[in-house]
Length: 76
Image (cartoon, rainbow, N blue to C red; front, side, top):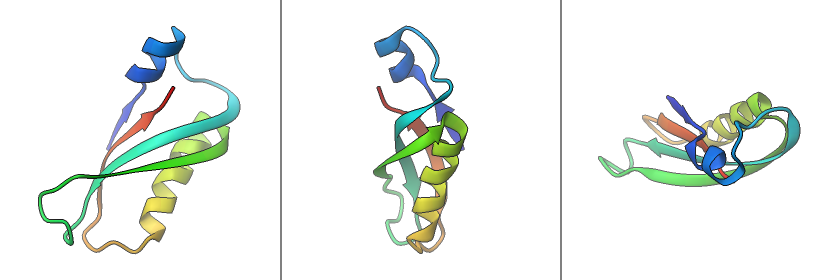
């Protein structure tokens, strides 16, 4: 799984840190979608690490078969 902060860094001029409200985009692939990549956007509150973990946890709780999380992006 790749953790990407490039868009946030470009928009704000600093890396995402600390406590706040965060929006994460999660790219993932499943056996149900074949080779297609699916993107979901998840908003949460907490530290960046907590928000990232929460985004992945929420995608996994949807019950997809053969789930592979490819990338988690912090949105500006």
